[in-house]
Image (cartoon, rainbow, N blue to C red; front, side, top):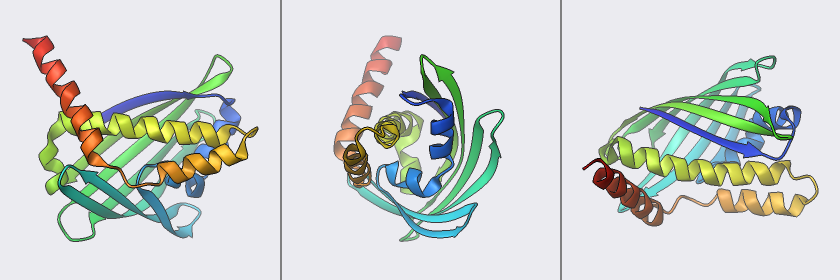
Length: 186
């Protein structure tokens, strides 16, 4: 499935680019993610915990920098995750691109995601809605990291983002949006 998200950060493209390439700083901004190992400058290992309703999943994930095009301000990462209890897997290619906008930077993220096991059972609409909410939390953390005036705000944002995703609230909100879309079509 293909997921597209965008957000703006209050920093010039150069500062946003430097942060985007600093994977050890970026991984903790993903809700439920924890960097577990720096293999080298282009490879990392992480653990990602997600709770969707009654299903709790923890993925051991290999993250690889596939491409970094500074002139185009585009970076591509791949993530290959295995659910630690053997109940499925997730693979993603994440392309992020930066563009200047109103004195800040717009970050566009395109994710090609493939799921197997229990996570795949939630269907395209629910996963897309939940991912949108996760990107919002991710964006808030990046914004705080780019706010050099308040370094304690950045520490607080990283700590908040690092908490595992509580799927009940995210899931209910996603289901509500799905119902609203369903009734608009009819």
